[in-house]
Length: 253
Image 1 (cartoon, rainbow, N blue to C red):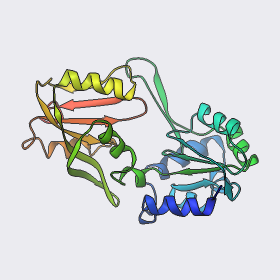
Image 2 (tube, one colour; image 1 turned 180 degrees about the horizontal axis):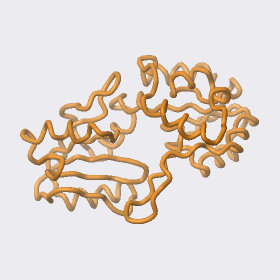
Image 3 (cartoon, rainbow, N blue to C red; image 1 turned 60 degrees about the vertical axis):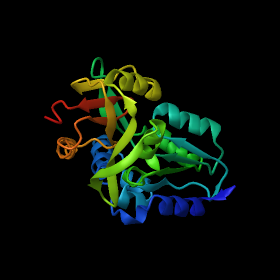
Image 4 (tube, one colour; image 1 turned 135 degrees about the vertical axis):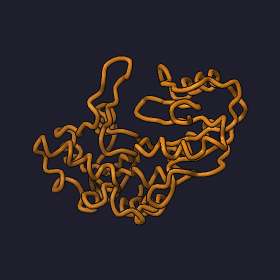
């Protein structure tokens, strides 16, 4: 067993969460989804989470037997956590809300979706804890989403870009020489996705990629800054079950 207080302090140090005042995204999204349904999220969640929108969201018992890991709080994830946990267990997630993107070629998603009220009440009743870490994880290279994707691609970091908070959410990397089609096939297998949304020209030789693990309006600006020096640059963005590539297309011309 481990102390919840000790785990909370360890996560906070590991991801340098004290260097963030508030999460710029979820400070908007959480009120946006809970207030229309009349859920008093400010009283239900932990006071520090309500201020920072990162960290300990729900505080259960002090003694933690098992830490469960997830990316999004889907109904399936939360039901399994409730079924397989014992009082005091902790769920660590990257996002405090479900982001339902849907399929650009099929059914569209609903965007950000609140956690169901009955599931939140069940988590509290069982005295379980929930800890989330969003942008502090994204900027904690080589930990977090970006580092994991670079490791999976066996990519060598060259230069960070797109500053955010206390770090960056983009990295220019060197990869084993490949081509557009081969890289797309690799990404489909690696991320277990049905297809890749590709923009631009296919290239016979790719040796550098720009990986950006947070998609924003600044994406085009930061990619465009490197177009002259990196003619074979490939941009990779990730979302909820999707992957988008842009190579010397609208982002680079």
